[in-house]
Image (cartoon, rainbow, N blue to C red; front, top):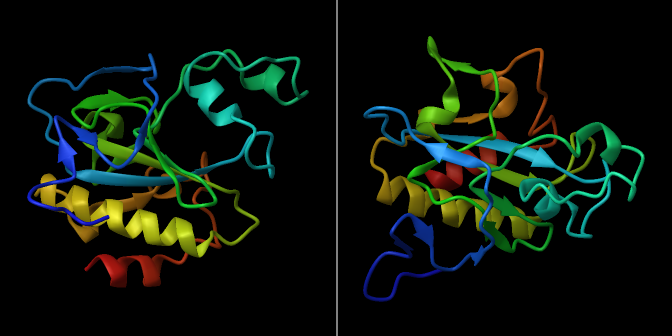
Length: 186
């Protein structure tokens, strides 16, 4: 991803990402600025990749009959701004200036409702497996672009879902290499 004559983010859309609009978003409240990234992991069914089930979940079209686990989650209205699959391909579901529904009950430095001021990035994966080189490459590139576009995002404000919802969430999990990721983004 190299910017040729300008930013790769235009009108809060990542131009290099596949675009699939999710209905699961809302306006950011008040004067909330984008100032944090939240890193997640997701796989549907758990521990399995591909199949388009994450896209279906984020678009309220997950068929509960496709897997027993889906009956538990098909009713959820959730989304993230970005999904990075195992091959490093990036899909955008919600424009960055809108509030994606990715963090749920959350708190960062005394501020609740982190969806109001964050961008959610899902990595296709689970707590029990390493992420791919391609995923790190894409995540690092996207992070640098977002930090350049939204100057309030700093390395200190890039967190895991587990950091803002401890005890409730564990992602991106113990296999996410925070030291490598942060060093590459600095």
